[in-house]
Every structure is written in C-alpha cells, then in structure tokens.
Amino acid sequence: MHRPTPSPLPDDISLVPGCPPLLSAADGGDPEGWAAEYRGALRAAVTARGCVLVRGLALTDPAAMAAVFRQLSPALMADREPFAPRRRYADGVYSSSKWPPNQQMCMHHEMSYALEFPGMLMFACLEAPATGGATGVADAGAVLDALPAELTERFEKEGWYLARTYHDDIGASYAEAFGTDDQAAVARYCRAHAIDFDWQPDGSLRTRQHRSAVVHHPVDGRRLWFNQIAFLSEWTMEPEVREYLTDVYGPEGLPFTTRFGNGDPIGEDVIRTINEVYDAHTVREPWRSGDLLLIDNLRSAHSREPFDGPREVLAGLADPVRLADCAPTVEVRAA
Ligand SMILES: [Fe+2]
Image (cartoon, rainbow, N blue to C red):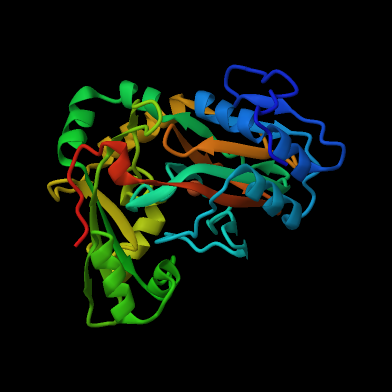
C-alpha cells in the first residue's frame, strides 16, 4: 500500500552503553506487515545510529526472514568474491559465512574489497547459540579517529592491497567466489572489477586488488575506516593456522592477506593496533532467536564472536553502493 508519510517507529529505541540501539517490536504475528509499516522510519534510524537491533518479531523461519528483508530493502545483492562460503536460502538471502565456531571473525565491512558493496546488512537469528556468537558492531568513524594518525594518513594516501590465492581445498574456491568455473569468465570479471590476476601452474588463481582504506559516507560525507586490512591479514589468523597454511601453500600462496598500498607487508603490530581499537569500540548483545539486526555497512564494522552449539543467522546484503560514489582517497579504475 502506498504511504505518503512513513509511520514513526512504534516505540523508543533504547540506548544502553556497550549495546547496539534496541527497538522492541510487537508485530501481532505479521513481521512482513510490520516491516512494511515501519520501513521508512527503521531505515532512517539505521542511517542515523549505524545499527538497530529489533527484538520481538515473529521471525521463526527462513521464509519469514526473507520476506522481511525484501520489505526493508528494494535491492538485495548477490554475494561476490566471498572469502568463506555461505549457504544460499533465496536470491540475496544467505547463511552467515562458514567460519570455525571457536575462532573470532574480527571486525570487517562486508565486501569492502569490491567495487560495489552493500550499503545495509540485515541479519536475522534463526537459532541462537548456547553461549557466545554475538555479532559485534563498531562505529567506523570513531575507529578512524582513534587509530594512530600516522597509520591512517599512510593508508589514506596509499590505500590497501588484498592478495588472495584461491585453492580448491580451503576457503572459497574461485568457482565459488566468482560464480563460474569458466576461466575466461573469471578473467573478464577480474578485468571489469580492477583485480590483477594470474593463474598458477597448479591451477590455482592468484589475485591482487588495490582499494581505498578510507571512504566517505554517500549520505552524510562522514570519513570512515572502511576496509578488511586487519580481518583478512595473515596476522589475524590463529598462529597454528598461519603456520600450517604457510607450510602448505608458501608465504605468497596464502588464501588471503593484506598489504600497504605500495605493496609493503603490514607488520603484526599494526594489525594488533587496529584490532585493539576495534575491540575498544565494540558494542554487542547476545542473539535471541527471532532478533533482526540492521547495520549500515559503511558506518559500522561487524564481527562474529566464538560460540558453542548450533547457530544460524541469515544474512541479507542490501542497497548496493558503488565505491566510486564514496569519494575514495585512492584511484581505483576498472579496465
Ligand atoms: Fe561479515
């Protein structure tokens, strides 16, 4: 139904230090109708606050979650160039990335290494874990301000590199990452998306992509630390995992690692500093089944904490934004 004036939110958003902004919702058993009613106000709240956790919706199955995602966003995106596989529930609706439950997924922005990424993330909790497993959120503007100036100035000037090697037996294969096993189609994708690539003698694919580490929000122009420099660094891996991967694939053949924009390696101390600043700015709330967490993917980084027991959180990647529209600080040009 056409609504000339969006309904204001039915309740105040509760603000508790250390927790994401929380909205309690009563949908009368119709989460899709609730989402349609409050779409405008809810999206405005996400833009204003960086994230909003909605609790109380009758989100009990993937179909209801996908219907709410579609109400809240006019455009769901396909996952591209993932570093870990996801299960696909419906167009634009995925499981969370498959990642060892006992290992932290450190703070990152979804698809920050792509030329187009989601402006909003939607997470819906189908099954809350017994312990742990929260999705942490950190304000990317506050993180940028809190990082050492000499570090952010260097990254602002040089950008960052993501170096990947796609193997068949670990992480996402190139066929999973690019949606095809046709090497000519993968090559076309890479050229069109400003990714340098070469095929290795063993059939694996090695890529390097240069990106802006700092961007400006397309709505309010705010400067944001927006990248996966720390999360996709070899120094964020568990030491035994890094040693194993280096043994098996060699230092240049790791599934992923990151570099300064001039190609220099990034030291362990830099990665530790970035992750410590993220930790200091993290807000979190343990998942409850049926929770809906909406995140402005530019304004906020997110993480996934270690957990025990089954955990299923559906993810919707929404509202595509082009890097070119975020005033990147380094030039990134596709062929
Ligand atoms: Fe993520």
